[in-house]
Length: 318
Length: 184
Image (cartoon, rainbow over all chains, first blue to last red; front, side, top):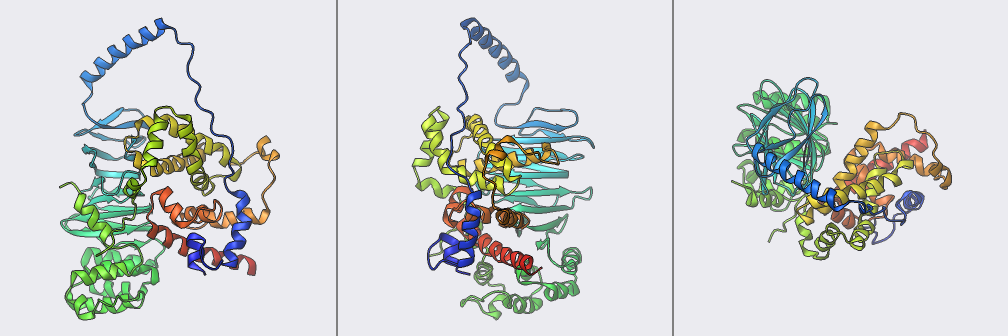
């Protein structure tokens, strides 16, 4: 495959890609008429305007008196009985077994709250939008810049890095995030997991974020990740190493940071079979948990450099 | 010195002063600015919809997406977020369409007026749409809408690194699927 041609149409054209381009081009967008501009309202009479303005002032005054000030999530009832119309800082709310609501904030994104969920709004500052999910399930579609939208759970916080994801928390406070677009970071007390699209990651009270895994990974690997996360089971680490595919290198990278020093060497050996080991990385250095070398191994995963994470942290609210 | 690359990097568009200006002008009612935004992002919106809903419905929904964006524009306070915000509106419109759409599509007048697409093109499109979500949207923007990788990154808010990975892996998967189809 000609990577340059696929990327930016430079270099020697790839015949198969050219054939697909020619075949699919007729299905692409063709320049056409602009959407019709919304027609201005011409028939408002001055009296109507005055009446509307008066009503607006009255309703506005009443609204200001009863609703908390400051930015807030607009709440739409998707299903069930409407309870609230907006959710500002400090407000808690829940859905019953028949209700679903949508939270919307133009500069941030949308959050669909599933039935039997309990949530609260922790912060609504421009640089930090933070919700808390005590139990239940949400689907988040976020377009705010990375590192501005957080969801607290009983055992970790999710940090949106520009994405769509589903987060659920059960009655025990155990969480599971499943990412469909972009990236999510799970973090608790310095323990971090980075979860890409098509992957999932669990988090547990007292243990924090686990090892992320692609959802198409072998079942044996996923079971072993679960056992390792819960019990730090050494035999589970062996199964993860044995079952890992090329794509699962991201799980191995996280495993490398979780296993005791005595096991780091064998995790590194297996990881090295899937990636081109950077020149500045040595086995001894990795076993000694040299942070620069661990970062270099991440960069070799071909998923973007570690510096984006540090960039986010630099600007993150304290 | 290490190069700073963000997975989603809307802030990089600070370098392009014309874009905030266009959004601001459109917010103030400039049809010309809105038209330029339409020209600039229509292929991206079209591609996002092609990845999700029946092809015959896409053109109408493109118009709906831009009209909805126009109505909501006063609420968008960060102009730099416009591309990501618009792409999310497109994805949500597609989801809403699928929720309310009848299970069986009827032939509409607009479909009868159009030149029908090549059957093979629709088959390949279906194959792409069956790929994991991360790949199908990027591949459609590249192969159907004709955007380059850098353009996809700029318009969707994904970083160039992510787009490059999605294109590479998506294309590899697509080749495997198409080869499997031809050998059946």
